[in-house]
Length: 486
Image 1: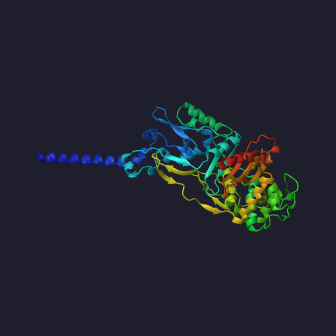
Image 2: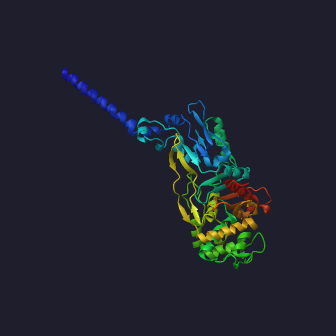
Image 3: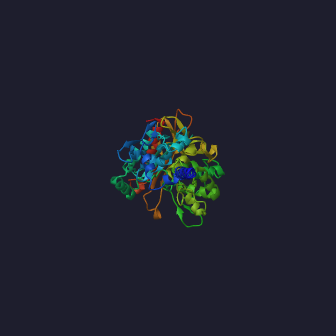
């Protein structure tokens, strides 16, 4: 009898051990598999069971959370949603996350293990940390000035601090309110359908995800290449440039918007934006050096993140001489985001240095302690420091006496370059109005802001659309906001 009891006890122990092994396999080794199963809603319920962390601008949150009382309790709310949407993106229970809400989701949702002083303990207990906060580099006044300046017209504004790469403003228009996508009811689905079917594409982030022909603003890059390559040694020496200029190997004649561009010096050609002079300069510099300079400024960089991805700006590396001439005045296949052109202006302002732009200053725990900071960023030398100094001189003259006088700010030194970019079949589309610039308070030792503005659907008659007339006043407002000048 004792022997049978002993056998039964051993069998029970074996069953218990098998149960423990099975539970361990499910709870530990297969936990991730069950957590990620689409039929398991526990993680989703836990995710929305607590408020999401906030995105901060100027120390104040532009996001929040609302307790809906539903199973997925907390829904995202936004303050000045359309103005900050190109930065925050959306956080939707139905459609996921985008832009900063996506790139910093681990911190905002509380899932980032760095939020806990004991991350291994959290893995064991399956506890969730409170959502952390994300502190942005944005200047609230500059963001507001850019948003109001576009006033609903299609276009975008990007502004950076040249000495650091901090993004001060990032605006895309027309915009949308991310709050309409926060819940998971039928109205959210209708809003999603409406936004995605809108011909004006309000959810497209034109500042970083849309590329445009940069037009004459690209002449900053061409001038830098010509000066660095030694093609131009004297800003006031005639350039031996005919007008009109016959594109090499073709019978196509390139003209200018105004007369008087024949043989103009670089100084005068830059001031009055002579296409013929810069097209010939690009050909004289050559594909290799033009490509090297463009890429040093950031063109053809497919890895830029701020921390969400940025569409690559492009300069074609396989050009014949006629195509090179057009590319050198920002046409043909040359394409740029507004952020890229702000980087170009920033390099001129900062002794030829291109600093990788960034949008997140630091991340915080719910307690306010720091989780991470921006740290050092990649820096490239786009041009020689003396070349940058000469370009600052040229850009300043554009604003004081050239095509960019609408960007002038009393009490500040402003440098700029206008652009009117043709596009469409046979250039039939409404031209894009561009302006790139930098500004320095007369009391400061270095420029504090670099800006790029593009306006797609200028309302004026086609012949009256200019970067100086349409885009420069917006850039002026943004620069004045950063400098705190009227």
